[in-house]
Structure formats: structure tokens, C-alpha cells
Image 1 (cartoon, one colour):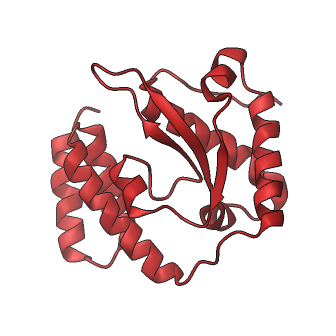
Image 2 (spheres, one colour):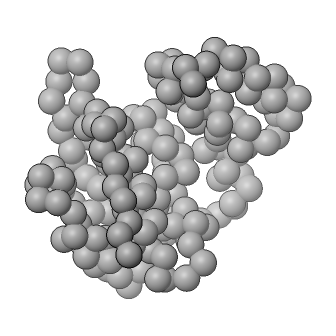
Length: 177
């Protein structure tokens, strides 16, 4: 509705009233980003990462078997993408980690995203340079109820990340069935 300033003011009031509510911080970060206030959004998202990690506790590294399984499932999703989108991701290593790092959040990824594209995102003067695709195992497990939901979780977050990384706001998807 193009009312970002109003939304930001309301969310700031909400964060002030409920400073321990990570969801409120998250919504503020999303809205700041949407309003073009990317640096402040990153600071808020770093706070969200810290709050979520504190609530989550120790997250073990993914096992070799988990890593292989998630890579295979993600590659299966990639095979179903339209050719132009698949080419944008082709050749990039797929890494599985437990949860995002502060460095990745500073790079612009979503602290609650299951899929992250890491590298140099599209900018006003630079072409994007994708270094790797990262799957956040712990965030995936929090998002799904059973393994059958993994492809849908991958697709939804991949579309959001491709919008951000490649500056493709028009990118969308639909489910036919």
C-alpha cells in the first residue's frame, strides 16, 4: 500500500513495547528493507539472528548423510526450474549448514530463510556473482512437518532469494495441481 513509513513507525513501537519478540523485530527488518533502508534492516536482522540463535540453542553441524540428502533433494528441485533460472544457479556449489552466520546476514540474506544465495548480489553497477547456494538445515526442520514438504520449502525460499540476489522483483511462481 506504499505506507512503509507508517508501518515502520508502528513496528518500532511494537519492538519498544515487546523488545524480546523476535517476530516483531523480523517484521521491522523486512519492512525496513522493503522501504529501501537496507543498512538499518541488516542491523535489525542481525538482532533477529541473535535472538533466534539464543532461543534455538546449540545447533550441531549437519552430518555427512544429512548434507548429501539435502543436496540431492535441492538438485531435484533445480531440475524442475525453467532453463533460464537453472542456468543462473548452475555450477554453484551447494553447501549445507545448521543456521545462518552474522557474516551472511550482513551480506543481505534472510536470517529465517531456508535457502541463501551467497556472493555479490546484483547492484546498481555490478553484475551478480554467485559463490554458493546455502541450505540452512535447522531452519528447514523448523519450517516443515515431514520430508514431503522439503521441495516446496526449497522452491518458496529460492524464489525469494533469487528476487533479492538477482534483483528480479518480478519473479514469481505458481503451483499447478
